Image 1: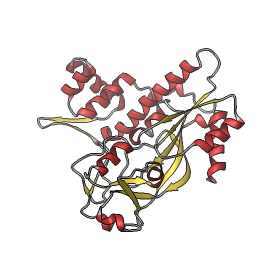
Image 2: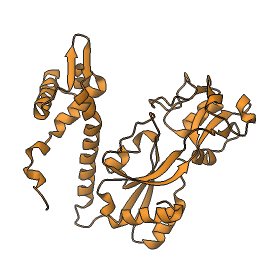
Image 3: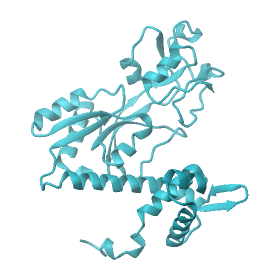
Image 4: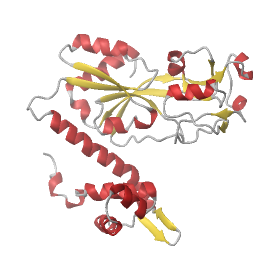
Length: 301
């Protein structure tokens, strides 16, 4: 092992129980509600957070009569802590999978709705008949966590753009594949349905249906009705007249229905379809071979 062994670095030590407790308080911004959810006494939770702050040498929360807020250091820890717990979960999964002494010959491939992975999977299976490939659908809000916590070995993702990011690349290796243009889903009979294409300006004032709890996308105005968590729910909201919906071209092609039409948004930047793997996992031969097969199929670099 090159350099100083990691196990000799006392600063690398972090109590994962305290990290879990920190995330609960950060989520609720309330020690009382966090203690309730964790089913522990509030004083015990407060002591654990104070101990974590002492371990790190920083204050993670500001506490005053108005409530609890994250400090800058606390905000920085939120994403790192979530990734750390996901990695811990992935380690447990992989150790359990290897408990017989023989690693599982299974590759779990995550995919987003509309991204067709059949060609790549079939070519990979021809080269590696000894590896069982399991395809598992993942939603927009778990593209990173599903990979980080080991639920999938490799995932086809749509990389978020600009400010619309609820996605952590820390701990992931991203391999770009191809662009996926932006489309707008319209109810049949909408005034814009007669156009060949629309612009972002054409959508000013139009209600645009978001996914539940998704960051703002800054196109049109926010619909009063959310689009649920899946593409199917979003399109149902469009068909019912609750608003319009931004969708990638691959999803538009896949989800054809008589009561919804799609038009390109000419001046919107495309999504980037990519493969995501947890850092270090490309050393697995089946993972590297799957990525190589995808590059051959899609001509990615």
